[in-house]
Length: 382
Image (cartoon, rainbow, N blue to C red; front, side, top):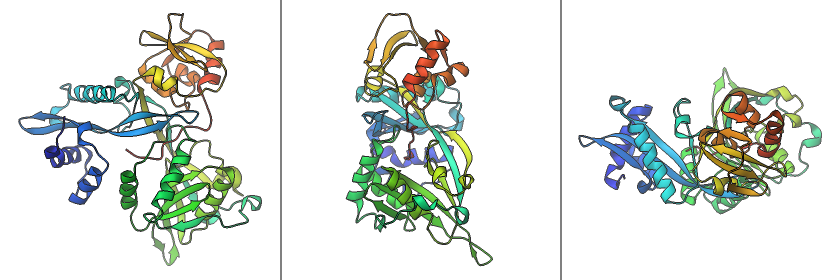
């Protein structure tokens, strides 16, 4: 287990792997949202050569229930100590810690896509990168709000309202996580003084603009930090506000607009919203099947028996329980992790050789059972 005395050396070890330099201010900011007791280090000759840790979250499941989740982070091993089993030992230590804390779900975002499936993690959300040419982006007249319910706020002054709005929003979308007051203050500081925060009675948005000029013409790039509408009216009002920002050439959103977001249908020209990249988002590893699959809702009033690495579970509208019946679906821990948030179809996993169905009819039932809308999304980086 890491100690307070390891904090600076942990940053240096992590920075060497990820090509980052953490200033004293950076270290102090990260420390406000970190519990050093949730970190583990590998030491050789008195030097830290490996780090892994976790943040404590509640992650929303389909239907709005949330479960305690370990947000695994800072996973790194020194280049001199690769292929010696350190990564496996660090991940094992983190998983044991999460189990001891009673956290039924583990989640992470991966710097490389080929690392974590062998540890039981499956891709449960996708990160969509989008770009909007603001000058061409215009809402259809019937969707332009008649009133001005959105208002710009100072984030620290309005922090209780922002936090309350986030808590209302995050339970509407599987994959979103809780944010403590300390996390919000760290995020606001990281966004910086250029951040613009807009509150609506049923939503919240935040962005910042990198000011640029092209021979006297505004060409600033807006980075959308959060887009959190709770209702269709709030969705239209917040986007109307965003699209009204001055001196902006393009609006870029990295992992802030879900694949099923209806924004294109509100625009005069649907093609204005361009998807420029599509990456893996959150990877999930189900530590407690009964707690996770018993807490989520399903898309059909049905149940199926799923075998996961030798253990059979009846999953569906009746909850989650161990059984001895013949399995309808067979998968591994990573396949189960991909299913938990409801954004990955079993038929997709079957086509990718990650899941084996008993029959085509069972596979059709499985798609109806496990896939839900809206699509899962996580706007919190960890």
